[in-house]
Image (cartoon, rainbow, N blue to C red; front, side, top):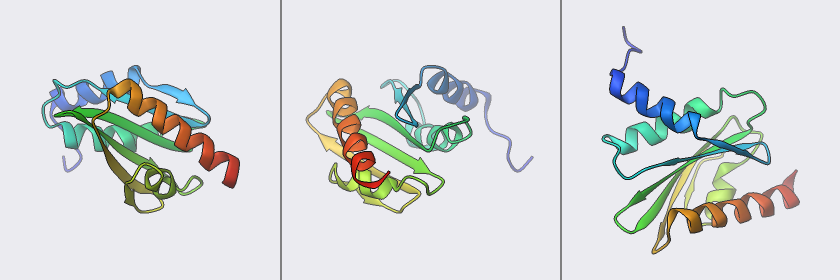
Length: 124
């Protein structure tokens, strides 16, 4: 019972995971602006995307009042802190995030992919 969650949160996470895309051994998902408990859902979805075979890091983006928030996770093979630092964020090797002001989700995805590309070119 400790790990049970509300059905609506489970359904929101499932929807985000269903629409995730794989990019260079990472999973990228986008949450729309209508998600209740967005911080919890985004963070848990980033965790759950690591369960997908071949995914070395996961990123979930959400739009919050004119900025894009990114929650990043890995099991350590990719250092998501370095990727988030490239986007003015921070955190830890396996759990990091950032907030990018005055960009759209599409622009946020493009910036994230550039940061992933630079990271892979330098580190993998």
